[in-house]
Length: 534
Image 1 (cartoon, helix red, strand yellow):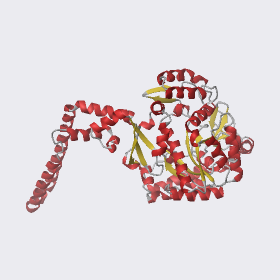
Image 2 (cartoon, one colour; image 1 turned 135 degrees about the vertical axis):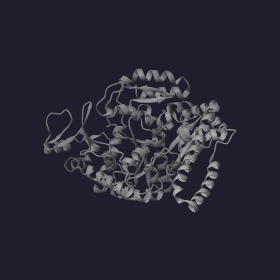
Image 3 (cartoon, rainbow, N blue to C red; image 1 turned 90 degrees about the vertical axis):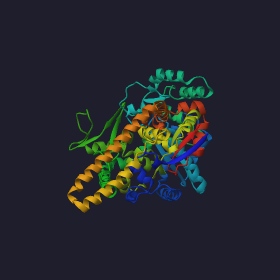
């Protein structure tokens, strides 16, 4: 296996906001805690270790032990959990939904990035310890987003009903789908290992939260990954003051709205927020249901509820049963940073975009805002496709071109005629310059007519060049079709491979060596896209 790298900003697959963040644009600097670097991470670690509550740390470790009580902890997981009790141990976190079979491939990249950075930090700063955390989004209720995965171009869809927190969904109804999937896996050693894992996790008769823990733990237990479920009464007890403030003051909405205004003023007037704030950023959990809380003049309610809950009553609910209250996408980051001794968060571009709305809100709560790190991204290419790329004489960055741009570039390269008519434009430019001088010396009133004719001639050349290129594409149809097929295999549906394909197909070929190789070649702070030859 080999690896190649190109900067994120040169791929064309990342937003202007992310590119400006990676380039440390001055106008964005007040909206985050600094560009991720080892020095900034160490400073963040010193700050967080001083401010993090020993009581919360103890609760965190106790609850993690409880959450792991039904599975066998590896020595690496047990060691990291023991380290987490110490005040000089910090965490690096990533989070993700409970997607079936881990969902798109980038889920694996997020966790590998997190583990690798913890290793690098420990090497640089041996006086401190750094533990990787995977935050399971067990309270999320968007079942549609997690209910399917793609394996070798085939979609596997879980058809069941859910309206509550997805972590509570029983996995029994998955059996018909998993039976079909296991038939696709074959009977290789790696296939049988995957089938056995499915049996221990999704087919064991528990809920989706427990199944995901078992599945992800199997993949990463050797690296000491700690998996946390925030849907926990003891952990939420420490979040009670913030729940009360959200119900009484709605500080989150006020702060986020102000930060969005400031982003438009100081960064970009056309800035569009990734997530628009609501008046209230809490849900209320019931068996099989997750209700969005609504505040009105009479108190609090939710859609479909006929009566209202008075302010004193709902605050009493918070005190007695904080586990019934679930933070939404904009409040969850604060919950995470309250209960974890965290210094950095790994996410994709969309995730970091909504985190970028939250810095001023964190400031109002006196909670350190973590460093935001764009996770590693990768494109895995088979040996067969590597040969095709070589035959087409493509550069790595060519692969990321949009389809028409790639075809046009390649057709120009392989044509036996010169399709570039820019030399004719240069000749015309010289001739019209002479004509414009002549007009000025005779009758300047003809200047408009000359400019109009010049524009017409240049448009004519552009049109002719386009027609020549189109004709050459037809002539080179076979090569164009093979190029299109190659790019479709690498970028299915015009998307990044990592956002479509599940890891299972690559696991069948590589087994555990895939994760080992990713850990070896990923550099979490490099801001580079990785191309893997396997």
